[in-house]
Image (spheres, each protein chain N blue to C red):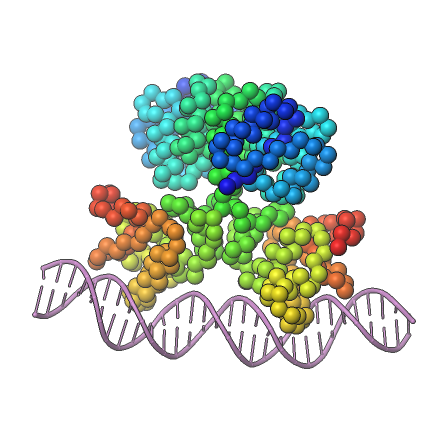
Length: 234
Length: 234
DNA sequence: AATACCACTTACAATGCGTGTAAGGTTCTT
DNA sequence: AAGAACCTTACACGCATTGTAAGTGGTATT
């Protein structure tokens, strides 16, 4: 069952949306506490986000941007003002659909289904800056072409992407690659990491593996090697 | 440069659309002869189709359906009637976007850009009934999962998909797999074909390799083994 | 019905890629 | 300056993919 997070401040509308979507067979999460919306949504990991732009506390645009930055959850933006700039802005921020209130029930449902269908299959794709990683085959999509990563390279990249911008301890990576088996050889990881680095370096990928001496590794956007990013979250 | 095919019967509108899109940097193909529109479009292989629903000779819906059946060209549907059923119907037929006239220039351009961006990278994907084939790595996407085909299996499937439903002579397949080099061994193809057949058989793919005795092979949708399909096109 | 041709199956050997191991070099830190 | 952590390189093993070969099965034509 697909789950949908709904962010909407007008309670009446929220209720209506909720029941409409539930009747259609979706699992709905109404979000009414707007402090820390973004985190709430990221924790929920819904299959889709239905987002009102006009919120009391925080701009819907802001939320959209944050969600799109930190995840690849599809976003459908809803607004009461039929203002073109809003729509363009939302699409710029990565929104996948845009609807104006009042909307017809069928139209909304059709759009939602459309977006979900569009993202279908992309479910086991990890999204990075400028590239996609297929978690099943470790096919890397970058710049319109595709490259096949060897399984272990892929697993390493995968575990780094899952903690994007955060340090992943070497033990975690080993566990991800060889299963929870005890440290076979730390060097094995080392070698594979180097190989992966070389591969990534030869591709137009806007990302970089940075080693954190004594701890592990992290994946960073290129031209952002500075230490300003929050990195003390381990 | 992205190319866009425009199907629109009102000449004024067509001209306007055309210049608008060209100013934006697209290569526009205006289609004004509506006999054999579908073939014209398929021959053009545009990156996107901008399609008016209300046409004199043929229903836009029909065109949309045909294009979506025979290709994976993205379709943006435009209509003058703001009728919900139209929109739903279009989306059902696989249209990617829906716009009502009169539309704001920016909105249309934004939608077009959005759709094009969405299809980016999918450019080297071949689409079959219920699955996708990445022509770069021969990753097969089916039913939400992905499988990696060996290179030669992939090449064979690729050449069959490019002539979907039509017989591909054995020589053509050999050429596609081993280059134009002379028939190495017809048996090699035989063996690989069998292996590919087995692989496909073990996947939830709605497709089937049928051998055409003395000629070659063809790819057919499953539960359509009958001989009614046009197969004499070689 | 028999034959000849074509399609299929199976097994096996070879090639190549991915991988881990080992040894030695480099960089960082104290 | 020394030790620790990290990196590089080379090599050998193993598995998947592939082509070869030989033999079986099916079909069409006479």
